[in-house]
Image 1 (spheres, helix red, strand yellow):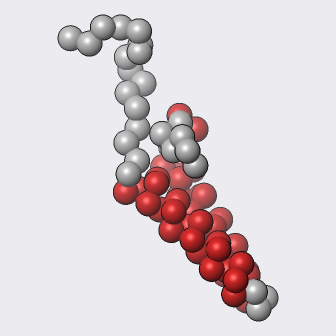
Image 2 (cartoon, rainbow, N blue to C red; image 1 turned 90 degrees about the vertical axis):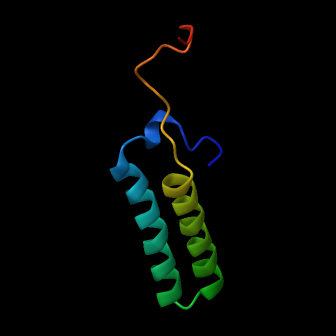
Length: 70
């Protein structure tokens, strides 16, 4: 997720849904006996939490980027 500050990720529910899908995927993988892929999915979930909740800073959408700052 190179562009985690993309406007698509602005709504909180989308960021929560992405983390939930990764965690659900990990549960399915562990339940079916594939701990390697479960660990990979947990890594995705951890990275998503880091990007979407710890580092996330939404860009200002109220100002035009071409406007000079005052």
